[in-house]
Image 1 (cartoon, protein in one colour):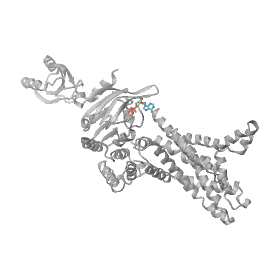
Image 2 (spheres, helix red, strand yellow):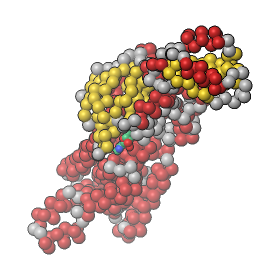
Image 3 (cartoon, protein in one colour):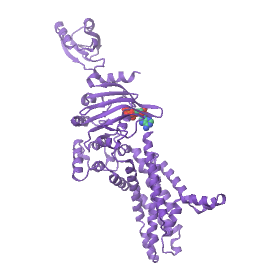
Image 4 (cartoon, rainbow over the protein chains, first blue to last red):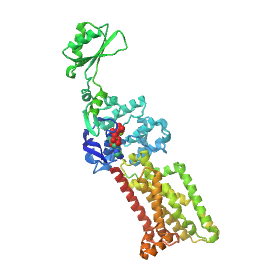
Length: 312
Length: 244
Ligand SMILES: Nc1ncnc2c1ncn2[C@@H]1O[C@H](COP(=O)(O)OP(=O)(O)OP(=O)(O)O)[C@@H](O)[C@H]1O
Ligand SMILES: [Mg+2]
């Protein structure tokens, strides 16, 4: 488990990480979001004891990053942002090297290397020089390295960066599958990823935490939360707009452009972002319209992200 | 938990995987032969000993050892692998020494490849094998001191060229401080003890004795302590890099 207590990092005059506190429990996957330069990588570097914090502290499985860095590193599998590895080595050789450093030898070492090669689908490049790998394979090689010692804590800095859609999917399922007995912290710029894999998400901007919650809690802050988009056939837009605006549960109505001429599409925003689908359904039924589309939105993470990270 | 041997092995392998290693070995051998036979007039001296061969080592190492050492840390930092290497559960001291030993072994291998020199002196006469053995030992120890300095400067920058130049300069100072011409110049201004003191810090002073077959434990301690102290400094530099 990861417990972070007002961690800060100052580079010269720049406060890269400012009093960040959070907690990730076993079985949880925390998605770490934020614009470029927000301080995600810096936070992760402090948790893996690569750089010391300027103030504050953190505990990994009960070991303090300040007092017990070697134990902390034993608990962590770390995928750095740039997915570094030794160019002049073969993929298999590299993984063997890391396994040796982690203290394995003989059959156990072979077994572990075999498992991670399987998990990250690296078998086709096992005997290829890392120098000649494509970016995605490099990324996976470095990810494999982080899994070798079956660590209770995984810290992955943009694990799906540079992967093709299939591999993104693979890696996400891998992360999800592993999450049960582990504590996982991932950073990402792909917002769908948060909804797809994370149990909770944290948004930081300029080193400060600006949003925290389950994906659904974050989505509930969206302007589009519970908005309903309907497409009706053979209706007068003006008339429809007026009618919708009369409804007491509707906060506002927006006429959305549609590529089909015979359709009128409207987005209705509910009052207090409450769910209005039931009421609207009844209303449309009574009104006896030709309904072509009826979509309820959970909210848009990108919009929440922008809202939280651009205000001052 | 230690990690020393895997790191040493990887680093040594990295040397032999790069063409630079072979270029280095060839230059080292050619330069050795060139200095001994051309500059040193080895044949004319008519001596069945390797004194002349070892005489040039402080000068050869001045450029060759920094070339071996410049990549040790600069390359890790440039390629980002430092972030892996320094987040393994391995003590920084182990890592620093492991990388150093890899480079030292590589130089040792190059030095062993000069064995035809031993044949040559046997061909010229019947040499005393004592000074030959101590010469090799002293040369290897001295190379270690150069390499420790190169490792230190390599940890101070991402740029291998800067690292190279820095270590050449530092080593040059340590070579020159024991140079006869310098001590004579110093003697004209300062009392004799001063130039002696300066000379005590020099590679040349300590190597000269060993090269002649006189093994004084103090000379060995000198080189070993240079290596240990400079590598500990190396650890400190890496630690402070992390902090800034
Ligand atoms: N070694 C350093 N020296 C000085 N400033 C640094 C250093 N490392 C990071 N910074 C600065 O700290 C801030 C946070 O950087 P960080 O890499 O943590 O951002 P990030 O959230 O990971 O961004 P990205 O999404 O682009 O990966 C940036 O402004 C960066 O320029
Ligand atoms: Mg980053």
